[in-house]
Length: 331
Image (cartoon, rainbow, N blue to C red; front, side, top):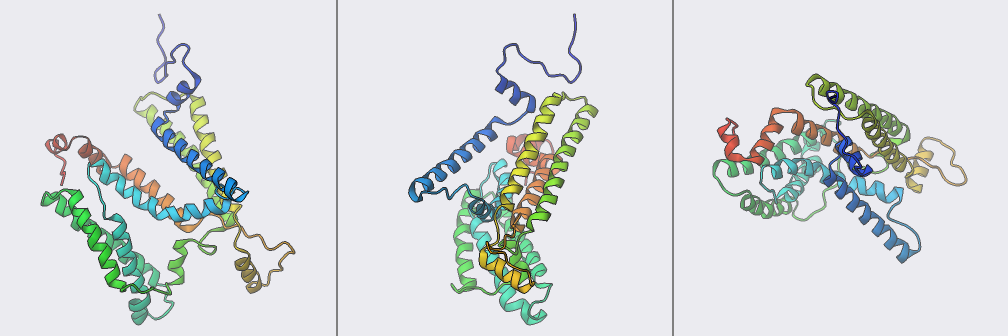
C-alpha cells in the first residue's frame, strides 16, 4: 500500500483536461466567466464597427488605450466598493461624491491656492490631492457612522447622499467651467503628456513579470512552511507564462498607440527633432491614471487578503452576529 507524497494533488481517472487545468491552477471559474463575457462584448462591438464603417474600430490600440484611461477612476472606486459590498452594504452616492470632491479641488486649484501660493506653484497639485483624500475620507466616515451608530440602512443613507452631493457639486461651481487646472495635476488625467512612454513601459513590463514570478515562488515557499497542498510545477509554470504574456501583450498594445500627429509635431519643433516624411511616431505607453489604478488595486488586494482588517471585513460579511460574538468591532 502506497500513499501520496505530502502536498501532492490527486487526479481523478479520465478527468477532462480543462477541469484538471482549472483545479491544478486554482483559477476561479467565476472570474473566467466574467472575462469571457467581457471578451464577447469586445468582439461584438468590433464586429459591429466593422459592419457599420467597413473597418474595425473597437479592438484598436487607440480605443483600448482610451478605454483604460476612462475606466481607471471607476476601477479605483470599485476597489473600495468591494469592501462595502462584502460587508452586505451598498453605496449609491459614490459617483456623486467623486463629482463633489472633484469640483472642490478644481475650485481650490483655480480660485484659492494660486492666491496664497502664486500661479504654477509646484505644491498646488500636492495640496489638491491631500484635500481630495481628506475630504473623501471625511464624507465616507460621516456616512459610515450614520450606518454603524444610528442603525440607518446604507441604502437610505447613500440614496439621500447621492442627491445631496450631486446638488452640492453644482452649488460649488454654479454650473461654470473650472479651468485651467494645474499642469502637474492634469498629468494624472492621462493624455500624451500624462503617460510614461515606450521605454518606461517596457521596463515596467519586465518588473511586473519579475513580480509575478516572485509571487509564485513566495507563495510556494509559504505553502511549504505551513504544509499546505502545493500546486503541480506545470501549473505554476502555466500561471507564470500566461501572466507574463498578458503583461507583455498589454504593454505592446499601449506602445502601439502613438501621440496625435499635431502633438508629436509640436513636441518635435520644441525640441528641434527632425520629422520624417511619414510623421513622427512617439509611443504613448502606459497612462499615469492606469498605473495609479493598478497600484491601488494591488494595495487593496493586499489589504483584503493579508491584513487583520481584511479578514474582519470578510468575517462581518459572512456572519455579522458571529463576528460580533468573536470580539470583532463590527461598527
